[in-house]
Length: 94
Image 1 (cartoon, rainbow, N blue to C red):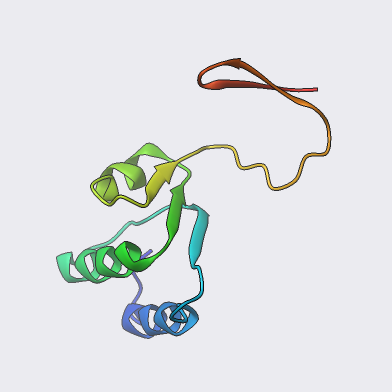
Image 2: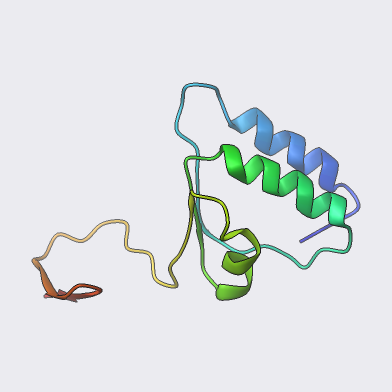
């Protein structure tokens, strides 16, 4: 969300992006925003990330032209049970 101190927050993100280390943004969304400058700065930042996963279609659509952007409503960080592939885009967790 765009706030009055968005430039400061952008700099904080840039500091976290250490060169040579992977940088991921997972389970995020973008907006609302008022200024095109805000969008443009974040698009440039997102382009430098290794992977960005948005939770909803609106945010995904804003940045879908970037090669590192995907959308997933559900994130699974750890699962120790068996996983079966049912179809190309379907998984079964047992």
